[in-house]
Image (cartoon, rainbow, N blue to C red; front, side, top):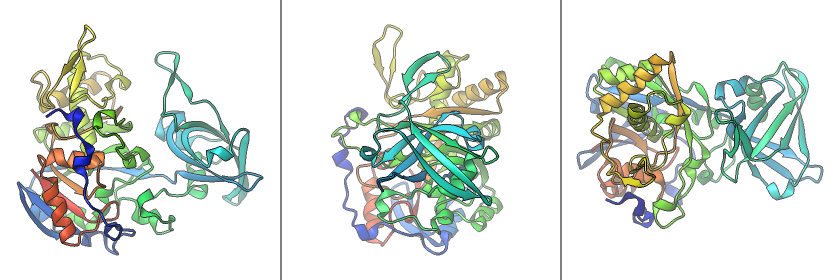
Length: 432
């Protein structure tokens, strides 16, 4: 299959608004669970998940935590300006930027930008019983590439470099967000964020701050379900992929070749790689973000086979890495989405693990822009737990690739059997 020339119109289905879950059900693990197993479709409830999984399997979760990324400022004219945090700019490390005091910078999308032509905006707030003034200033979209020492465009044109300054150096940026920020819920919910979303739009195992959208497949898990998996002998590991707003970006081009995938930042620890090797580089992925992380590891390992001294930044997986690569003479070699140069998943994961050990790194920090679509052959993920995705979305393409094109059978069943769709909707277990 020529993946680049897939027509997104072939992945359209009718999704009535009343099938989009605007709020979660009262008990997370009482959501419906669609079961797809080698072409057969049925259903159960989520808290019975363990009954459908093989004992001793490895399950991978994304432990990212959604930040309160929306911040609002008022101009003297009364215009409300929104700064939506997208990506750390200075410092670039997520953990560091949340601990900064007095100053930091983010790439942001700006709401009502036409009303903010120039100058700074300020907002006063009370935190920890004291008054604090936060000022934002819009700078250029360029930043210095520390590795190369040159200026390059680091973010999409819709992202603006915003300087944040505040007059209380004993207050961290994390604390400011907790008090002044608003949790961003998906735009298709068509409602304001409510206090309850602060809890319901986080997984029970969320730990690492950085996402602007939840890894929603994980919203069904409760501590009771996790305990049942442990008792069933399921081996659990966590990775981190910070979900960007690009996950909601619709495919507007006729063919997916013209769609630009967003970049997302990942972290995988040595222990997780070692677990993967003990499980023959096979895993059950909780959510499409875990899929993108795990499958990206394969291409990082392939790259390391030829470039063992690459930097973590150079391990970035480009959008079309599974489907083409550049030859030394500058021409492009087309790939079929399968193994590259016969390198197995085990070999690729071992390459990444060896790289970390050589460089005395406890974890890999890199990024991925991978697009997974029909024509792609999965390397590591053998089972997938995921929600029901929007029509004509890259996530639906990912699901279609996983079930070898059989996605309509799954979605027709879900629509006919009162399943709830999208972020706060029901779940599915897919076994191709």
